[in-house]
Image (cartoon, rainbow, N blue to C red; front, side, top):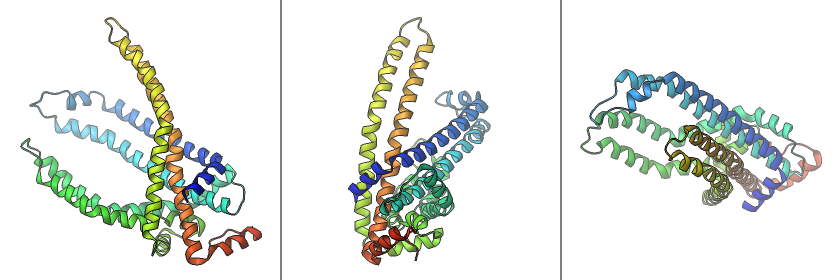
Length: 321
């Protein structure tokens, strides 16, 4: 399964790389613009909130002003990340479907296919997040104000322990639910189902093979993390080599701060480039594995192999029905 995902990645690297880099690029530009506007709008509020004495407390108006400026940027970042994840989750099953049938995967066709199934896959992603993470979100919404109000410097408020205990107890249930629904994006793309029907279908496909799906998915995400780190490491090192001379030069008396700023900018650019390139594998590979798991579960339970052969000869899309 893991080797098959590598083979699919090599075969379909052009559309996969193009779509993921495009998604990341658009997301980075939108979030950077939102943060830039927030920083410009906040102005001197930073000093009023953070540059104060140890015994002083920031004014409520200043704190609220920072929230007003930066909360929309955070919301935009979350929305962009969710849309990007949904688009990648729609792309990979489409690539696997065409690869299994031996058909070409041009960039434009894959982009159109992913975009056409985005609403359904986005609904799946949001439903999984609400079902698997909803209780923790509610618990956090209850405990966070209590933590803020109970922070008097004498020790952690009781709400901290309540939040930790609730997260610890819910974590196994969240993992169990996430694995049960993990094939839903592939179902939504390959079978054309809506979000709720895709979740039900994924539950039936995973039933009886939960541990297998869990083990393969875990290995896929671990492998994606390791390989992504290896890809990103050279870019980080190159950025550090550019930053160190600038830091040393900035330490000299009478040095120009411009040197340090240039070094920081170069370092940030290399790090962002490494993140973007490694993200192609980190985001794409696990979804390819899950798409192959979908095909494998259907072969085991529904004898999909005969349908694939017939679809390959007829030129039709497999998986419906």
